[in-house]
Image (cartoon, rainbow, N blue to C red; front, top):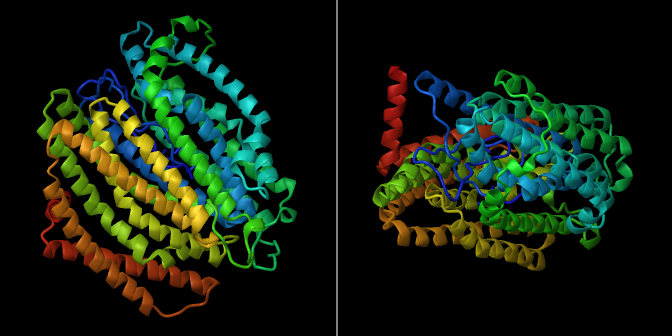
Length: 610
């Protein structure tokens, strides 16, 4: 999976792939806020460097509420369907050779899109869209038409070039046993590079005209298309497939046919095609018609190049980390390197699935907190009210931590039943599901450092400062990659993917400490004593709740490893023990007088009165 940038993927968006607010290092008005960026709808997190674009004139009254509800509902449904597609595809193809090859090929078009356009579009071009729509006599139509024409030419050429170079890309990213499969998948998936770019720009056109619904909802159609592809694959190939000697499906090239590759590769790209086409009605409603325009000299290309430098540095560094984690995960699971091929060794599919679960928790909680805080932090930064900015950041960290800590505790204490419940379907064997649960345990450990580091990074974005973020993240990314190499060199093969997550966690912690130190020098004390006090209390509550939930799992009656009764037991244990964990956590927070508990009670009471 793609690494979080401060990216997450192509990064993340509050939908299946979470793209955060993206920014302009020069001019951002005090009311800038982070609207959800264009989604690829592929379940992967985009990478770019998020910063808030200048906000268009904001509608008043019910329009604001309606737009917020529409985007919030779209984001939630998109996350759910995006995760659903991951589960369905995993059940159809497993986490062996076929699953790892498919997941690796999925990365390529998104990584290249981020390098060619993604970060630049998010941080530079989107603000220009808003400005053109506001100031140009034609509402920015000519600007959008020129940009679309240029992007189609550049991305189309890049798509052709990288598709021809698919074997070379596979050589760098895949293990030797995967290269042929990854190359064949890439021939079908790499052309989607053009489609990702068109979707991003067309979404920008709609957002600049305050038409937010379609860019938020059409990725759901993409997810449904891929879910259908996975279901068809399961019915045609998986249901009647014969496992190998180790009980695995599609774990050798002999078991993979050209029909499988066409269905998965072309079906995945078809989802992106349909996603782009589904924007057409919304564009017509917004009054936009695209016609080719080749007067590119009228585009502010020089300004775009100048402003994009730091963003491109940040994006490129993150792509190197993404390439490193995919390569190491693939090499770890290469059967030619294993002494005992009867032991399942998790690869990039297991890493990706655990990563997506972590990003789902971060996206639902931390991105929501960021979205609410960014207008306030940006206004405080614009007026140089540094104590107020520090107070907003501190309250955001406490609130996000209060909500994320029990999720992290569930990932740690209940990693085994959760992994089995969610992933043990079809071709995804119990061993693969248990391995995913083990990686999920580590994801629970690193979730909070990641989310806090992201919140602190957004405090720099509130000051429209991308340079500092890019600079202090370079050593962070170097530490992350170094950790990957150490994990591969010293850990047993079956623990390498867990080590990759641990390396992420170390880098997130370094990012947190560096950003905290730099913010303290710039805006003064961050009220970290109060924040630390809150973290200690919520952490103690989570330890108690996690211990109770884990004890419940230890005492849970044994059930068959497979079959309908096994699934009932997995669902029952995860749900019952998860609710027990939450109940004990909130009770302990009341006992420990956690401030956010009282705020949550007041909010619930107010909602019930309404």
